[in-house]
Image 1 (cartoon, rainbow, N blue to C red):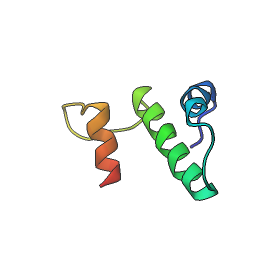
Image 2 (image 1 turned 135 degrees about the horizontal axis):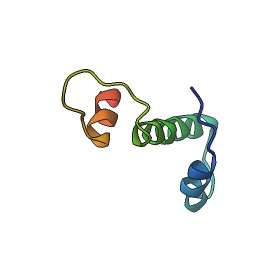
Image 3 (image 1 turned 30 degrees about the vertical axis):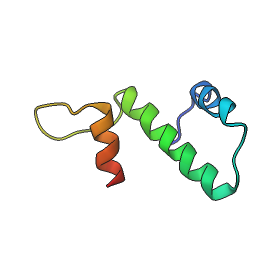
Image 4 (image 1 turned 60 degrees about the horizontal axis):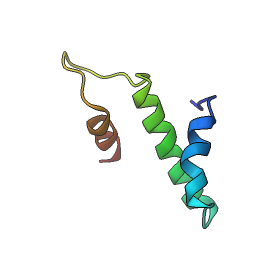
Length: 62
C-alpha cells in the first residue's frame, strides 16, 4: 500500500540531499512509509495491548 501524503516524505528527505543509488532510496522510502503508517494507526496488531510504534517497527525488521 502506498501512502498518498508525500509531504511527510519530502520533509524527511530534504535534509538528506538525495540518495546514493536506487536500492538505497527504495529501502529508506519503504521504512519512512512504514513508520508513517504505524503512526497513523494503519498497522493491525494481535493481542489486547497495543505495542508502541517503535516495537511495531522493530518487529517488522527482525
